[in-house]
Picture 1: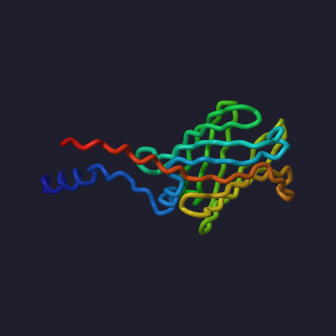
Picture 2 (picture 1 turned 120 degrees about the horizontal axis):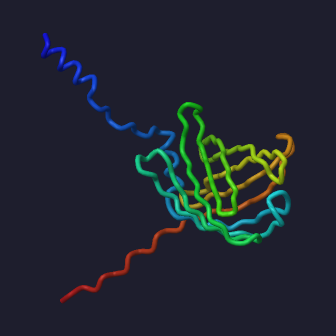
Picture 3 (picture 1 turned 90 degrees about the horizontal axis):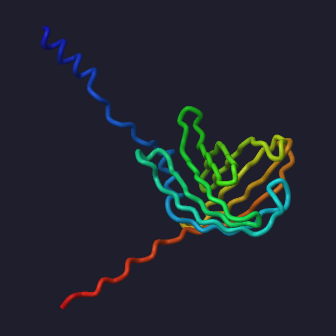
Length: 181
């Protein structure tokens, strides 16, 4: 009886297998890779407006639950760098996005996906005033998506603040190695 109890006790204390990402997390795989973005910021609360470009590299974090991005952007306000993290929160059944940039900015957004369209929302402060943002990402193909950011002070009237197209950059083919005779 004692041996049986010990066996049951040891089984109960056996380490569990690490959790596995669910199907919602796997949808994030679309963003993995290197992306070039070209777009325009509209004059307004986000600055003077003008063309911008960015290059981002998205990779899975260890464990496969989150993506992390390193983003380099050039715009009318200069060059900046950002770190982004995207994931899925099974408790709220919402996607999450957090970004921190080299100019002191921070963004925290919640999102959903319906087919090929991702919708993100956030509440933030701009120039000391509360501002709502929404971002719509539309997957055009496996290697291209459109991006539209809108802002609102009341949640009813929305103004386009930024629009862009992102194109996946394919890695260069490895150089051919000369054959030895």
